[in-house]
Amino acid sequence: MREISKETLDALATQAIELPSWAFGNAGTRFKVFTTPGTPRTIQEKLADAAQVNRLTGLAPSVALHIPWDLVDDYTKLSEYAQDLGVRLGTINSNTFQDDAYKFGSLTNVDPRIRQKAIDHHYECIDVMHATGSEDLKIWLPDGTNYPGQGDIRGRQDRLADSLQKIYDRLGDEQRLVLEYKIFEPYFYTMDVPDWGTSYAHVTALGERAFVCLDTGHHAPSTNIEFIVAQLLRLGRLGSFDFNSRFYADDDLIVGSADPFQLFRILFEVVRGGGMEAGSPVRFMLDQCHNIEDKIPGQIRSVLNVQEMTARALLVDQPALRAAQDAGDVLAANAVFMDAFYTDVRPALAEWRESRGLPADPIAAYAKSGYAQVIVGERVGGTQAGWGA
Ligand code: PSV
Ligand code: MN
Ligand code: MN
Image (tube, rainbow, N blue to C red; front, side, top):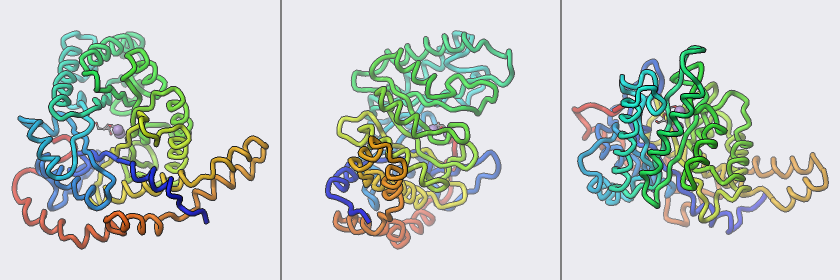
């Protein structure tokens, strides 16, 4: 078994995985969304829960907000509130998927007034970013069509390019635009940003501070996601990950649960492409829903899964792999790769966590902390947050 080297542990110590505020609300599927006692009612309560994940894992120092779900009067104050809890506010996610005006598109709409409404919403998000100190504006565009002939595919791309440019031009010098793609849903014939190539084409046209966001659940089954990772890193345009896991489509399950090997392969390409190095543009984030499992331990499990597969990816003996690849020794190269994947890093990581003043077993520590009982007792009345409020 390969030892975990000091370099690997140093690299792991710098890993940060942003949590989505919406993971702490009730969410899940188009069908029954189960509620849980103690679910946050406000963004302040979501932040308090996210802070528990960071306190127990040391892995999740920031929380992404969704506007207008996480609307408050004073974002500077909210930022201070987060800092008091030991976390900071991260990516600002815009939302053009819950307004009647956007039935036929938002940034792509043929009506210039509706396009402007969507652009103005992004300007508001940028104002929020200035108040919170957030670096990234994340756009997941729900626009698309359901029927052949319904919309002019080309015209929609042209309008999208124009709208995105207006948004990009409003960003501050330190801020980035991150454009997420998704193959289908909410529309089923065309999506206006269906794949990494479309996102790449738009972000390269925008400028140097525009990047692609890769959500692991947004591809056709059997897509080789690690290939996309390698290519985007090579092109310098991989800005962020939305991590989650799926069996079928956009399942939004716990990252690494359905296919840990795929997560390992993705993280191997991140390591190989310099994505873990200082100054890399790549940011890690979760984008998940917890419908039947408890949300806080669900998020703890998720960040630990990412950490474990990152450790295994860092364990790959790169010189041995390169030598085998260059020699055309297919089986030896594959064996080097699989050796790292099959290495159980959990005991070593538990020990390392303890050496850094963190619990060896964060999930057990959470259960013992009594936090769940406290929030169930305290959060009585009001409306629990959901995917959309
Ligand atoms: C919808 O598919 C989605 O899950 C996208 O992945 C976004 O990142 C997320 O919602 C939040 O807007
Ligand atoms: Mn996403
Ligand atoms: Mn999604």
